[in-house]
Image (cartoon, rainbow, N blue to C red; front, side, top):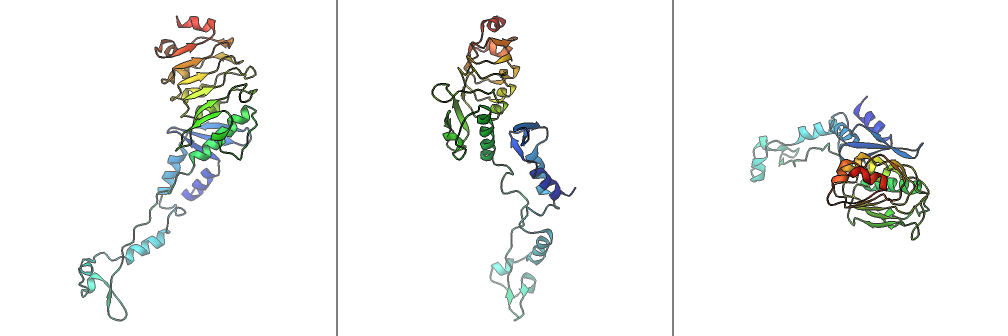
Amino acid sequence: MKPATALLSIMASNSFVFGANEEYEYSTTSNTLIAKPRLLFDKIKTLIRDDDLCCCCSNNGDDAADDSEDTDTNNDDDVDGNSGNDDNGIEADDGSDSTTVDTPAPTSEPTSEPTSRSSFLDNIMLLIYNTFSATIDTTAQYCTWDGVDSCDSDSIEPLDINIDADAHFPIDGSLPSELGLLTELTQLYLAYHSDLVNTIPSELGLLTNLKNLHLEELSITGSIPVELDNLGALTRLDLNTNNGLTGTVPTTLCSATNLNLRVPSPLSATCN
């Protein structure tokens, strides 16, 4: 497959680039993001650097070659004002010498990333709020949505999601794994939603900037994912009154001296 054809094929797959080592594909069929093993951005950059890929160059290969041949390679005498040497200029029809202007070589580097992080976040936030069965104004920017307490003013990354059942809206869906893609989150408060069911997604272990995670008094079941051990910035983790939780508390969470940990009694005993 020609590089240009390969590039068009990749860009047509509705893929989103995330982080340094992961790629996610948005499935319009299942309305979810699917993790994929290869690095889309690196592959596209490799294709763009290929000489055969001329769709992203400012000139095609033949034009670039012609420009190179027409460019004067030695115009030192012209710069000094000595134009009498025919070797240093191009002879004009009227007998006078003229100088050439060096043009920069066409670049093959892309002018921007193939996927916008802002556009990516638009899709992620929409997926999350749809999972929450929330009614939102999709024409408004997600930083203004109910429950989004703050966003970074420059990167527009969500920093604080605080959805109170009384002050905002009740959540009657499940904890979406896409929450793990909001990597700049410092607080996630989803407590007291008794109809919020299912398990704790392991993707929450990607939120390495998270300081406060409140999931108390929900109806979640299963075990605490070991991936939560990765949350080194965490100072409060509240899973209390989720009596459907089973298993043990991950080792690092048990031994963290700066962590205020609240879990149901049967699980707290596993830390001793």
